[in-house]
Image (cartoon, rainbow, N blue to C red; front, top):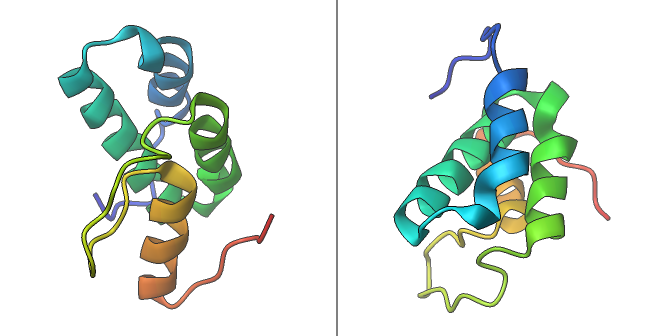
Length: 91
């Protein structure tokens, strides 16, 4: 986490895109978290990670406690990037 110089990001993202909705909830959470971290730290993959969340809709309807960050990728990435002081594209 926090490393932006990864050379193998394509492979995990391919796996996440192909298998996210096929996995058990615990694995889905881990894959979703990984995509969120990639989207947060690697700007070149940010739109792709946001698209994964939009396409799957995973965690979109999840209730989120006040002052907590949602797990829904588009919102998670937007909030986390804002915390870094960067900006994301608005859809």
